[in-house]
Length: 369
Image 1 (cartoon, rainbow, N blue to C red):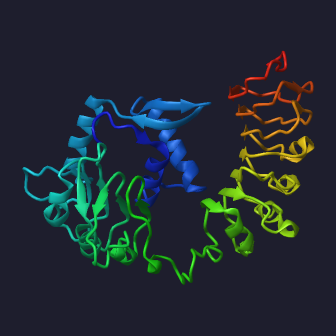
Image 2 (cartoon, one colour; image 1 turned 120 degrees about the vertical axis):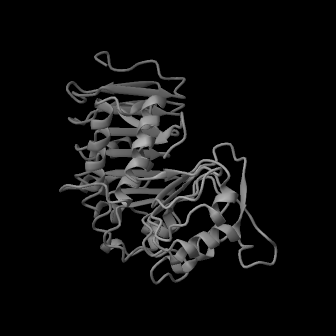
């Protein structure tokens, strides 16, 4: 469904598979999707395009293989790529690589369309917001709707003038909504269950990913029901109320696997000790100032990737005294005052990757590394 030579986001591809119920088997759908991807790469059916420390972020399909796949997909009615010079398609999954404005009102005759992917890589087209609203009204069975790079034209005085796609809330079967690089500034409130004011996620027991929530909002939440949360990103951490400046609620998330914490420029992290309870934590990003280096000693030994950035360590010397038996990747970024880094013998036994950027004073690293 992707254009020729298109760099495909691996994360997005896996979410497409999950939304379409292509993932079969026992276990986490994300893990099974990852296994599918690895098998396709091992068979050279998918090429790695961007790789960082063993993690693939972008992939592509060879042009010849893509041509064969497109023809086969048409034979089995899996999907169709819109061609304005041909009659409308009745396939349930459709990709639109160009002529978006022409497709939306007339491009499909199939009322039970399941997936619609709009590609506008060079921002060449913009569409009237009314056409997108019409699409949401017409195709009520959509599971996947990707509007990446699509710019909407709004009319002053209309109900859409607030840059809202009003009818998207009626897509009750929708599992994936892509709004990257669009100019839609907000979603209608009725797209969320019992939304009252700001987005309320505290009753979403099966929520697995929550990204880029501001600390003051997180601090106000009752997070006891977020028992299945696996990925969390909190930004603008700062001591609004010193008495409540804590990461205790994060320490209660026993299934957490990936965690990003970002401090405000003028603030430092509160104690990192609560993170020691996150025994399933694999990847940790700390962006901000750490007042006490010993706080790093309480991080869980389950970590496989650790990212420290933005003058994160106050001392000029960083010592990894604690053993991290599973740590495979360590990245140091913008630690402008860091001069020396030491590691106890056996402290990082399986380290495979070390990255540093913006550490002009760093002159010494452990010799064994």
